[in-house]
Image 1: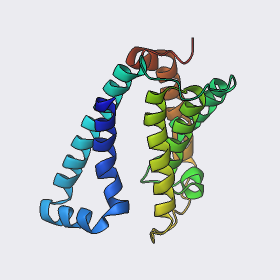
Image 2: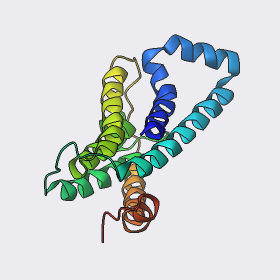
Image 3: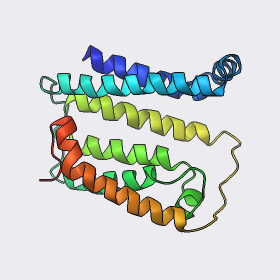
Length: 189
């Protein structure tokens, strides 16, 4: 469990700075340079993500059940995770209808992904991982509403088409092959 918690802390610490300590973040960027900051942020995030996966695998076998998931939870998870993969594939640099409507598709994707997994898994390891991502994303979604970011303006449907196609293809590959190999749980048999 400690590996999992260390991973969560290491992953969310750099991600939370913009919300919790924007002055510190800006000072580090000014001192290090933007590219060096991105390198440190990415490195901490990848190590944290690796520890989360490893910690989840180590802890899940012995993790107590916090709740029993609903029978229909697994089926809803398929849909929520498909939506998440599509939203993750929405490009940041060109604006289609999805990005113009959903200003922060990655946060909504993470909310869909984590909610779906909480509907399908009730063990403590899963609750810690997916609950953390859900809480972080919900808080961050509220926090970004207070920033003065300009609303994205629709440009073309091309980003939407590519997001739906690419997101669906990656979802199918992940669901049928990668998820079972990586996590030992095959969501689709």
